[in-house]
Length: 413
Ligand code: HGY
Ligand code: MN
Ligand code: MN
Image (cartoon, rainbow, N blue to C red):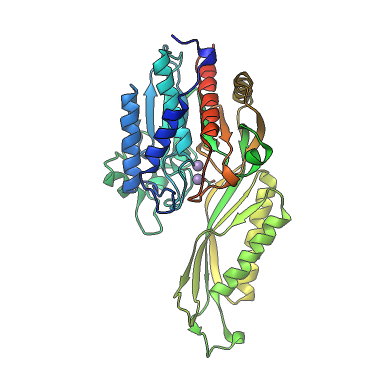
């Protein structure tokens, strides 16, 4: 048996697995479109399951379709979970989420080759609907597992096209009746690309993620009066899109007032009737506001709502804001982070503490067990973009650190 203190993953095999998975839902511009519970997601899930079974793991699927590939331990103790997600944005990249799931598989493949049996069982997780773009809320599978969201609310979630999550599970042959969560886990680790510019700009191999920022999502609509684009004088208009555009400007100013960490985004907008010579009567749009400090996030929530009401009045509109996702900033486990930093030192990897700008399943898991994350840099900090890219040596460094951290954590007394 290989001594564990100098074990490393097989970087070529990991890269090949990443590229094979990226072929599923591949887009013309080099990205991936495997939105949650679509046929493409189903294909990716099936491939992952085949790989896990070939590596000697048994795969369980919970009532929301989250997958748990289990490697038994020497002792029947609560398992260490390592995972992330295989679902992507519609114009997503090859690595967001996928790196964490397939690096977990690579850890098991490496342990098997070395004949190493961990003290605690290990489970690799593929969480359902992490992205939140097809179904809201974001990080839905881990939210129900962690008791942050009810199973009923999750099963009833509807996509913008009207698909219901429960029906999409059934269509993929997944059993919505299977249990979700409610079991003791030892700890949770997630490897993920940073999705921002810091680690690459500062030249670090890895990031020790100390926490995740808080987030509030809203669905908003503004309603005015459709009219003739030529004959309707400006003074008589109730233009829903003009009001929305002014509010979007307010959100930019809101983030600026709470710089450098405050962010605000309108990512999706529908205009009715969306005709070039009709004054828009209605808009429906999404809002995403985030900050690492809870009080500041609450302040941003208040200011956003205030600006929304002011613009409704100013443009003679009615409308509303419905909060659809919200979670507070979260701190990851100091003990796990110390183990990860120590393992990075033995691997000779340079790293720094960093707070995650993106939300991750680890943010929910931290509410029920010690959790921590490892980041790799990504090229130009780009993610949620088909050009998302990491260098193979970054994938190697992150996966090596995940392996060594798993060995230390799963075998600790
Ligand atoms: O929105 C997020 O932070 C994550 O990418 N789902
Ligand atoms: Mn992700
Ligand atoms: Mn993402």
